[in-house]
Length: 67
Image 1 (tube, helix red, strand yellow):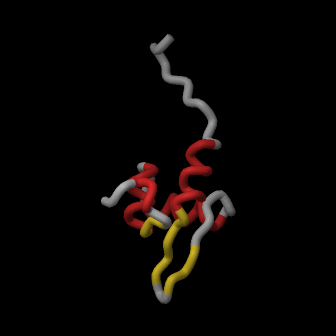
Image 2 (image 1 turned 90 degrees about the horizontal axis):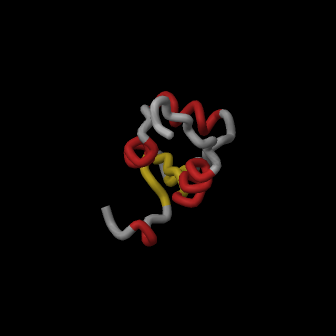
């Protein structure tokens, strides 16, 4: 992948890999309005800003056994 600052949008496959979720979950997040999606011809892409904003606003995870 190119320099992170140059990426304007992620393909569905790349967005799944970046966030660590499957296609079904990614499409659910789009349908719930939690991620923005755009169409380029017959292709769906996720704007990088939408993906970064989504991850930045996730709640902190409480990991058992870590203090």
